[in-house]
Image 1: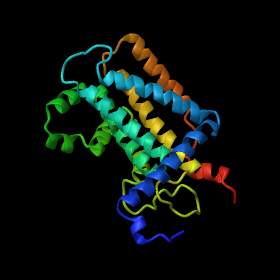
Image 2 (image 1 turned 60 degrees about the vertical axis):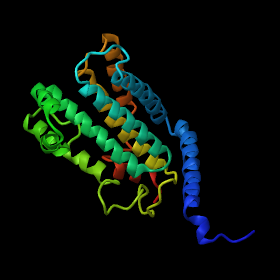
Image 3 (image 1 turned 90 degrees about the vertical axis):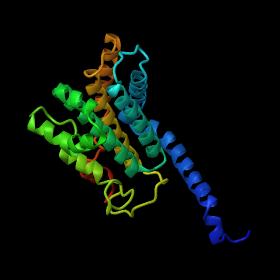
Image 4 (image 1 turned 120 degrees about the vertical axis):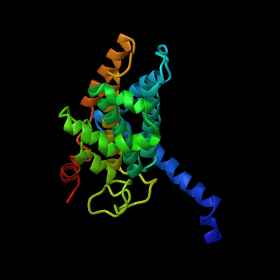
Length: 254
């Protein structure tokens, strides 16, 4: 057998090698999920139904309400982001899945602000991109919610934790095993899978629960979406960014 050369690892060959790695991780993730206890597979399945309902909601499946479809477009973006995050999770890109999960959490905060202060939705709808970036950035939305004492779905602490994986430079890549080396994307990690699934789930659940109050959906659809969000919340596990240190301490050998 001839030895490989640098040319075998570069150009189109690099994509082929990486795709094979990612496909293998995808298969391993799909096979592992059903065996990861009671909550993860139930959460995963319930999220699929929630995303199906949100996807149909975003495309006026149950009737068009007219208007500018601002919330529908936000909801469609959440569906796309969630699907992308789940694919990244399956392929072992856990940092990137968490980064996308952060963008879903941002939209949940924004729609919650619209519910708390309907005038902000009116202003946001008529604002140009410059005004939206200045007055409705993730930070500004969070500060306005804090000032209103109405609660913040994703507060500064959790947002910072989500930002610390992949979004901000300086953090070791895919570093989900304590005392272990960072790895490249495309390599399976049980802890990485569980943390990503729970964090994606949390962001989608928040958005789904908030979205119900911001759209004129048929009553049975609203009830079902709300019920599924509550059900999925019960399936969230302790392997998340808040409880990561404690989870590692309990599950990893010395």
